[in-house]
Every structure is written in structure tokens, then in C-alpha cells.
Image (cartoon, rainbow, N blue to C red; front, side, top):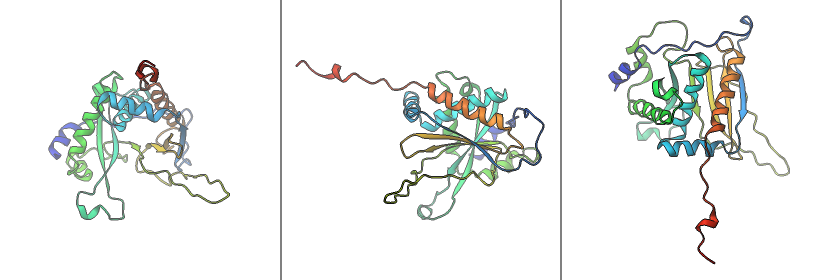
Length: 247
């Protein structure tokens, strides 16, 4: 598995973000975040695209995010990271802790062209990466031995589809609102997530290190991704009158 991953990821180039509109601000060290609530039917659109391609909601998002990154950076070959669960032993199923690792997904070719086969291509990329989860990320980095540049190795952005239940705090006579504080720090340069909302909707957020990813680039990533999700077709709904027999 490790040899296959090394063969696929050898030579993957780093992302080169657009230059800031103004000079760099050396004092801008805090993590910043851009958030866009998606339309109420966004989840339905993602799931319909997944159904048509015979894959998952995440594969749809991966293909769209890859197309957005290609448009924003002008690159046609790069990698995106995704966290994966590392609970291979039954004894870990009930353990409390952060048992995760990272999978590296190289995006190039068909997955970036926006065509009808791009989502299926994303599904195949995911399948190869997930099939090799027994090769830890640190071993992959050691085997590839990328140049030491001070940047995160192999990939500089993360795409996460959060599937946790939205937290609620029921208090009699009161209305509560979840306030999600920004991250204190990021392991990568841009961290794109979709969060479930209590009403069934989705919140798209892009957290970024401003010293690496300019604010305008983070906003453009979020807007372009939201726009692509909103243009996915909805499922065709059958008219119930056509299924009824004669009166």
C-alpha cells in the first residue's frame, strides 16, 4: 500500500496561492474565517450528484473543491488533505481521544475538468487513498521525502465534511444560539469545512492563515464553492398525479 501511494504522490507540486492585494501584514498571525450559509436545498443537490455518480457526498465536494482551487490558483496538479479515522482495533471503538490520521488526495486530470465524469474520478481517488490507510501519513512523508520549505508537506489545504450532530442547549423559556469560535491555530494554510446546521442546512467555512492565504483568496474559495454547489441539479420529482389511477 505504501509503495502505491508513493508512486501516485511522487512529485506532487505545492499550492501557490495568489499574491495579496496589498503588501503582507507581518502582524496578521491570527486565524481568520469566512462563512457562507448554503441554500436550504444544498444537501439535496449534493446527494443527487452523488447518486448520479454512484459515489458519496464527500466525493462531490472534493471534485468541486478541486475545480475551485484550480480556478483560483491556475494550477492543474495539487493535493488536498482529508482526516480519516484510525480505529483499526475493536478496542479503540469506545476509546475517548483523537484517533485520526490524514489522507493525501492528488487532484489532476479528469477530476478537475468539471465534466460529467469528474465526481466519479474523485470517488476513485478517495477509494485508492482509503484502501491504503494502513500506511500512516508520517511514513508516507518519510518515504516521499519532499523538500523542506517550512510549509506543510504534500498538501496545504484540508477539506472536511463534518457529520456530527449539531449541538443544542434546550433551556425553558430561552432561545440558545451556538457560537463556534475560530480556531486558535491551523495545521495547514486553508481549512475548508461544511458544518451541519440544526435546520438541516449546511454552513460552509474557510479558515485560513492570513500570512499564507490572503483574505480575498479565502473569500473567493468560499464563494466559488458555494456557487458550484448551488448550481448542482436537484432531483427530478415525480408529479404524484401521474402515479394515481383513474378515479
